[in-house]
Amino acid sequence: MAKKQSVDPFMEKLVSLCKRRGFIFQSSEIYGGLGSCWDYGPLGVELKNNVKRFWWEAMTHRRDDIEGLDAAILMHPKVWEASGHIAGFTDPLVDCKQCKHRFRADTIETVKCPDCGGELTEPRMFNLMFKTFMGPVEEESSVVYMRPETAQGIYVNFHNVLQPSRQKIPFGIAQIGKAFRNEITPGNFIFRTREFEQMEMQYFVHPSEDQKWFDYWKEQRWNWYLELGIRREKIRWHEHGQGELAHYAKAAYDIEYEFSFGWKEIEGIHNRTDFDLSRHAEYSGKDLTYFDQGRNEKYLPYIIETSAGADRASLVVLADAYFEEEVKGETRVALRLSPKIAPIKAAVFPLVKKDGMPEVALKIYHDLKKHFKVFYDDGGAVGRRYRRMDEAGTPYCITVDGQTLEDDTVTVRERDSMEQTRHKIAELVEVIGGKVG
Ligand code: ATP
Image (cartoon, rainbow, N blue to C red; front, side):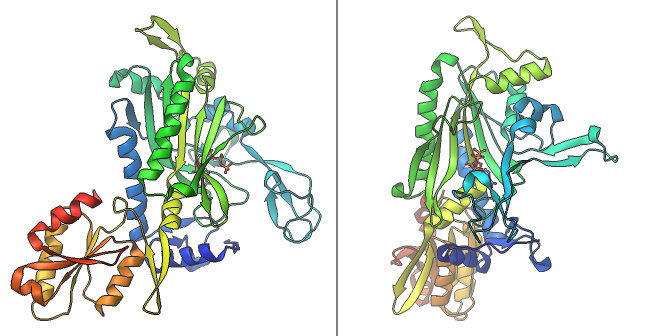
């Protein structure tokens, strides 16, 4: 099932590190793998959860004007009629008659097969939604779709959230959840997959204030990536031109990241106008207008959407953090992840496995575990243990040595500079905790 993807040398290294250190594995690997599906291992699930938490905190906890939601993946089929996905969520698909490779016609520049130069078939429109059946009978009337985006769950719940939360416009609803798209050409590791997670926020505004809030959200989302520790020079804006704009959008900007395989979209910020609420009002027959007491006016709000991928953001942080350098004739590989999202915040080592050092190290480990994610390792030379933690992106390594037994101090080695400083054991929570929160 898994088609071998041709990956560039940088991605090959990253994919191999992810496997080696337990970040990400090919799905169903023992059966030969399932194309474009990936499983997050022990470190990967921590990393992705941290990315999602970082988003959730920025978008909900730290604000008064955004509520959270977790809607079902399966929705009433009419939702997808109203949203336009049944009619229009399609990509043009072409096949090479010679080598049988398949492409999205809108992503290739030649009229011939980019792989072998062979003749291509006429484009066929292909709907990207996964279909399944609800209940025991597989018939047309029981068809349901796996949602291709989380946004629709927010639109249909607009009034449900508005009433109990007593929010007033402008306000937003945020959601993180799985989405599914039967992509024609998935690839580049977790960049484009058929099952992925989105982090979406829909901000409801008065129609006359759409531009103001659009500009505001562009700035907020840009800054989020910088706060995440992404290098400024690796991200840029891409404005959708007239030909590129989705049918519902008045304006759209993508934040792009410079991957080893080119500048690619990582998040979209869209002015969706009142398209979504007006369509759901029309298809459901329900009044989805909002009464604005301040303005004494009833209207359908405009929606400013910020739509990011949790997997894509995880790939961005991994790719941006990957770093190699020569140290004493050896290549040191490190993931310079921001301590805020690193899967393990600190590792605790006894220098040697004797003289009472493991006991002291284990005590430190159990104490720190109450505050943040720590890892204990007493296997092999300490240099090897440091290298393993460098590859895991662990920002701090705490080592118990001979001096510890005399004065209750330990060394704290910093991942990027490899500098070691001595600290009292009692100060560790303060020294490290402040940076990893
Ligand atoms: P593209 O044109 O590249 O297919 P899109 O414009 O359809 O993408 P959106 O619908 O705007 O993408 O999706 C919003 C975000 O969801 C994207 O910026 C990306 O981070 C994420 N995303 C979309 N499709 C996928 C996918 N197949 N795999 C992983 N993440 C995805």
